[in-house]
Each structure stands twice: as structure tokens, then as C-alpha cells.
Image (tube, rainbow, N blue to C red; front, side, top):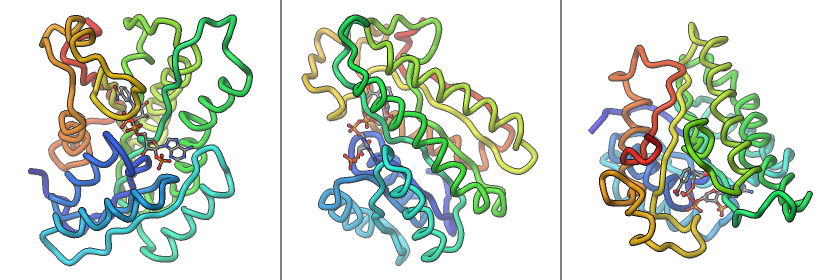
Length: 248
Ligand SMILES: NC(=O)c1ccc[n+]([C@@H]2O[C@H](COP(=O)([O-])OP(=O)(O)OC[C@H]3O[C@@H](n4cnc5c(N)ncnc54)[C@H](OP(=O)(O)O)[C@@H]3O)[C@@H](O)[C@H]2O)c1
């Protein structure tokens, strides 16, 4: 278990799936965890769980943030600055994966929503908390997807794949420009069992994976924890697949 004692972590999309697993992992490591998302009820329930996991009396909290709404992102960043005055680790995890449509039936509203949530909001939030991350020589982990890699056949998910390729590019630009101040890395999960899938056919999915199993949110959280830790002190600009070998 990595030690995050004294660190303040923001996990977007901390209200479900991979984000919740990351939040729990950081809480176990002694961090103060802020989870962001739109679902206030789930957010508050998860904070209760984090408080019960934390070894120390921490000020874990939930902050409302809609990645598709610039004002909400700016407000949430201000709230964090006012309440904590500091941020060490940013996990840009929130994202959507709508049903894959052929290009001919991709609607403008779906295209815009996917880009707004998966990449535009991520860039806006990163910009808003940049002073805090710089000041603390913190670290950023962005959640892309194997769908954003060239080697992966991302079916008909045109907008999703393109938005996730943008996350990879954004990661590399941050890593190159700000490497002397903070580290930025990117993860590319494969098939991870979370509510993002409207229907989840494990039997069908696992056949495509050399390890013959799908991933768990905890498999991803373990890599995020490593990337955020001192063990990854010289890891910057990396794009790490977590897919059981699916994209080979
Ligand atoms: N599961 C996989 O197989 C897989 C594979 C590759 C990459 N990923 C990526 O992993 C990330 C997490 O996905 P997941 O699998 O954990 O799915 P999930 O369980 O559906 O979680 C998605 C999270 O994103 C948040 N979110 C969605 N729209 C939002 C918005 N407009 N504003 C703020 N937050 C929003 C949700 O929070 P609220 O509902 O509270 O807003 C939720 O916490 C996504 O970026 C996804 O693309 C997942």
C-alpha cells in the first residue's frame, strides 16, 4: 500500500466505478480525499465509506461538479481552494461511454456531450487547479482508455475514441511542459466491470482478453496509486494500459 499521508487528492467521477475504487485506495493510504461528480447522494454515501476506511481523522468530502458545465467546474475548484487551500494529486477520471453508433447516426448533441465531459471539462478543471498542483509539486493522472490508442479497434465509438485519444495527447503535453514542476501520466483501461456498461456480458468480453478475465475497478486503482506515489518519481508522460493484454 502506497503512503499518501498528508496528501490531498481530488478524484473526478469519484461517485462510481473506477473513481470510487481510486478514492478508497487513497483513503487507505492516509490521504484526504475529495470526490467530485453530479450524484450528491452517492457522493455523500461514499464519503461516509472513506471516513470509515481512513486510518486518520480526515476531512474527506464530496464536491458537486458537472464536467459539462464550465461554471460548475470553476465553482468546485474555488470551493476546494477555499476549504483546503492545497491540492497534491488530481485524478481526472470522470467520463461517459455512450452506446456506440455508426458515424451516420452519431448526433451532434451526443458528439458534443462526449467531448465536453471526456476532454473539455478535464482541461478546464486542470487549468483551474493548476496553481495548487504547481505549488505543491503535485501529480496528475488522467483516465483515457485503450479506445484512445491507435492499436485498439474501437468499433463504432468514434467520438469516445477520439475524446480519449485527446486525453492521451493532453497528458503528454502537460508532462512535457510542466515536467520540472509536477508529473502527469495517463492510464488506458480495457474492459473494467463498472456501471459505465449499460449491459455487461462478461463471458463475451473475457474471450477477447489474453488473461481470460475482465478488469476490476481495484485493478485500475492500484496502478493509479502507484503513479501518484513516490515509487513513480521518475515516471512522467507515460501511457499505461490496464487491459489484461487485450490491445496487444
Ligand atoms: N469501465 C471501463 O471498462 C473503462 C475502460 C476504459 C476507460 N474507462 C474510463 O474510466 C472512467 C470512469 O468510468 P467507470 O468505468 O468507472 O464508469 P462509471 O462507473 O459510469 O463512472 C463514471 C463517473 O463519471 C462521472 N461523470 C459522468 N458524467 C459526468 C459529468 N457530466 N460531470 C461530472 N462527472 C461525471 C460519474 O459521476 P456522476 O454520475 O456522479 O456525475 C461517475 O462517477 C471514464 O473516464 C471511462 O471512460 C472505463
